[in-house]
Structure formats: C-alpha cells, structure tokens
Length: 82
Image (cartoon, rainbow, N blue to C red; front, side, top):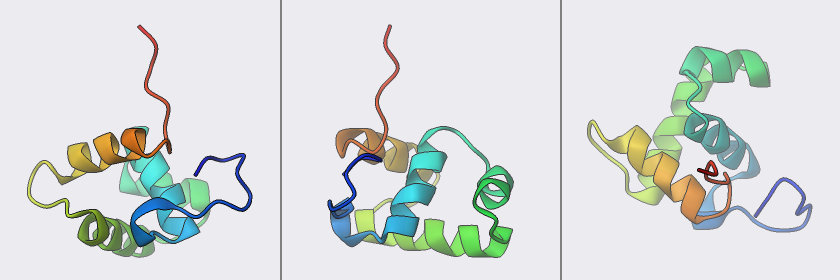
C-alpha cells in the first residue's frame, strides 16, 4: 500500500484513513498537527490512533515508535536515506 496505489488495501485491516493517520504519526507529527492536516478533531485523531495501535498490537510507552516501525515495514513511509 502506497500513496500511488489506488487499489491496494492498507495492511493489518487498517482503513484508508487509519493508514493516512499512521503515515503522519510515523513522520513525527503530533496529534494536533495531524488533526489540522486532515481537518479532523484531535479527539477523532486520538480514536484513529487507538484503533491503529489495537490492530497492530502496539501498546505502552513505545506504541508510537512501534507504529512508526510498522509503517516503514509496510511501505507506508520510506525510511530516510543516510
């Protein structure tokens, strides 16, 4: 699943919106920044993130880092080139 794949399905049963939120999480954006970017409330972003974490099995204080690694592994975000 990439931004160019119009027909591909997001990984782990994520919705397209959840995949979009995950991509922004992986880019280091805060919940507030994601909300502003997607024209959503912060509460809605928080709900999407909670659903993402549940679907990919991320929990605890490392959940955001786990989600970022997951996004990279699934091709939602390309790793930075050294």
